[in-house]
Length: 587
Ligand code: NAD
Image (cartoon, rainbow, N blue to C red; front, side, top):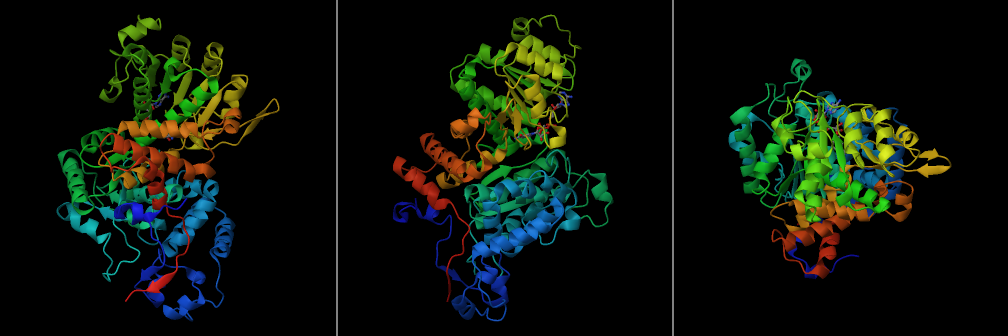
């Protein structure tokens, strides 16, 4: 599998270290560098050469033994937040071991290093943070953003064996952290966690990553009132000053890290869409909440279409919830239909959205600008027998389902129980295999519990969820619920963009990522109802998505010109597996 590195460009060969490493640190200084530290795995020779003798207990351990010990420590803790703190401490001490533990136990620790536990960590961030990680940029720094970005890279000794050029940045302004709203400086937990998943999921070497908190203040009263709050203690920057701040950040990235991919993360809906659209052609960037969500949900739909044997063009969608996630998914579904040659009128009828005020349609009262894009027009309303609606009419989900007869129902409302028994039974009355995705997180907010949906549809529904759910046995048959987790998309997208040195992330890349993911659901899983691969298959999924992204970057003229035969080789050569390399002292 390993590439013949002579063929590949130097910039790709440099994406992960290969031994032996030239290391300029000795003694306690070496033990303090998380990317170089091996703890008790330093062997006899290294202990002599690097002045470590006596600083470590006498026994030399293997990384496998260290993993067993770490699992003992973490599993002994009685609470997930404590496990989060324990894992963060390990990451701060020995990053190779942290990633080995994470990679080998992804299913167990994904919900700790990321949602849902990371949400609790963000809420209490000021009180649990042990060692700062990443970069905080505040409005007071607006004239020195490049300097701050450089600080993140340059080692104080000037020697930088474990440092790399930053190739991947995840930045948040902390305003919509998961479903928890404005978390101020505590939002840093999200870029840190997300980048850990990039490394675990796609092998992006940690030294190439940079988590950024655009700490523009907070309107969270609780945080402002906390005397120990660690963030920028001002009300949120808004309006033109906010825009200037984002502009200064983007300009500085182009200046300091011109090869970096930027992922916008957890911005509030309006800013999320605006910033994505403003910068996506100026800077290699994407928004995971919008585009990653769109792609992962489309993948689930495509897997369902595979199971049912009816094409995407024949599906009718009802979206309950027309926010950032709903809009992102609807945009991606529309793009997939356009790519398949479906005509505009059919698409206009096939995508139906609903919000707190019921069906979203042209001319309705209380219609936000963001929602007009998918408002049902007169022709479609007439098609569904809804031509007589008044501007003030609020159609319930049951009424919408009865009129539209959707084949796919997607929930991004954040409202527990919003998929009522009546609505699901109504849907099942018209469709052989109803496709039902209750996507709202956390578990307590899911629109319907999978076992209920199965009961209301006589076991016929194909279900994907936002949060993980246990398998259910109905009439002796085991049903598996795939999780529509963005982690199946963004690590591969990032890896592909980095290897391709892509100048832009295109919509086609997300469509290809969705198709690739859908094609990787095994027949066995599909037969059991699972519309996504198992999390344990994540690295292979990311590898395949990355290869498609590299190929697409080349074909649409935004990335490096690899030959076909070089692509998977280039991707493989960039994937880091957490293992200790031999060291030799640098002179
Ligand atoms: P958002 O606040 O931008 O949007 C929520 C939308 O739901 C709004 O349009 C609102 O009008 C609508 N809504 C609220 N109550 C409703 C009701 N009773 N009936 C109908 N519509 C209602 O939030 P978002 O970022 O779009 O996220 C929404 C949910 O989707 C969250 O719970 C989030 O966890 C989940 N989500 C899941 C995934 C995934 O599974 N991969 C990805 C992203 C978001």
